[in-house]
Length: 176
Image (cartoon, rainbow, N blue to C red; front, side, top):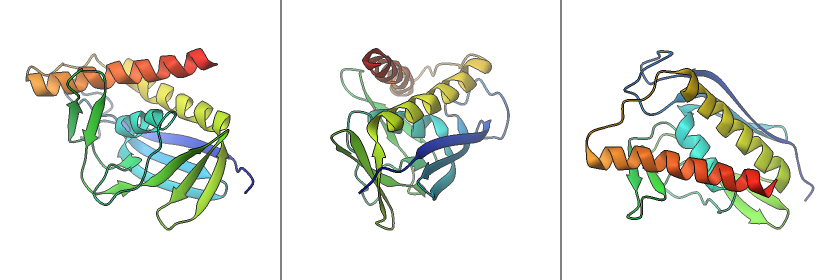
């Protein structure tokens, strides 16, 4: 199987209420389109959860599971930090668009929900995911600082989200 072009675009960044800025909303939303070859997988989703999920796939496989986390999730209801406060699990509803990501040497195989498979050059995949993550982070940086939750569970989830995000981005940037 030959590799196909891969890209990620996002439009209409906003917060859940549709506003351009909301210091209380921790999850950025937007219209995200993943293009694999000639196939487009699009969803108006929680772009911040999608970006972290994609960052995870730079080093880990992602399998589609019934009621499991989607690559383009509708929402990110809960940010659940692990005990070490190093990684976060993003719990969401069943709405969204999912596809599998399986590492195969210098490529990743993406499998759409209908079973169609695509092979993407790993370096191209990495560049596109990092560019998408930078766009999401830039949106946060253009907005008011977030009000960090007082509740320990929510605070740990949010702070761990950004800790894992920055670690994963830094590790990829150091690889070159």
